[in-house]
Length: 127
Image 1 (cartoon, helix red, strand yellow):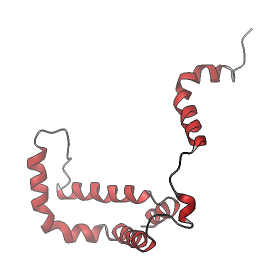
Image 2 (cartoon, helix red, strand yellow):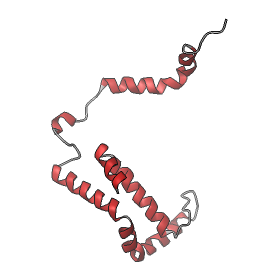
Image 3 (cartoon, one colour):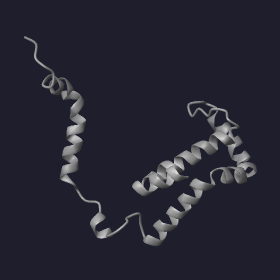
Image 4 (cartoon, one colour):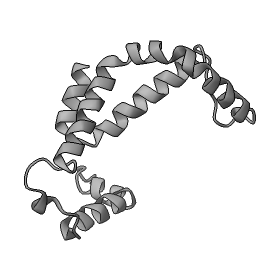
């Protein structure tokens, strides 16, 4: 609960990861602890069995994940009431082309190709 609240207060998109955690844990609990392998060819029958188990186990799942679900519900209410995720002046948070971000991406994407050259300049030369 506390870690989830901290993560959500730092970056609002962490709500997606919180929901992913709740769904993943719930699927594992619905499968009674058995591993669910999406690569299995029997995924559809397994999904049907999970869906059939959902109504019976839903109260337990909600109670188990209540702290995070409460946090996510509060966040959803904030988004609806605020008209979006933006905290503060929405006019200054509109998506725009950001040249510096493109330069950061270029540098980050090219770094593996230049790593040897970059590290060689940091190491002492041998004579």
